[in-house]
Length: 127
Image (cartoon, rainbow, N blue to C red):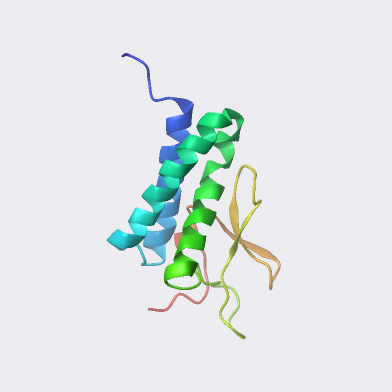
């Protein structure tokens, strides 16, 4: 087969790369966490095969899947780097189903970073 990588596979690979970049930026890219990304990509492959027009939404959906899986196993992620006071809280992905997903702090009402760009987000990064 001489076919280049399909748009579906390109979208899935891009989603994987973006979410992994955010996990690395927040220093939580352990093997078991990376497995959560792979599980989500596998599940979303079926979803986008059923609805090819949804390929632009895959990165945000994978980010939400990983965030939900991390919440179940480890706690909130990614923690908001913007709000310095009050209880620690996680960022949300917006739009929930749309292109160009961003991490958003609802408490401060701001976009923090595009999915895949948490490493460039300023704020309370402490280790």
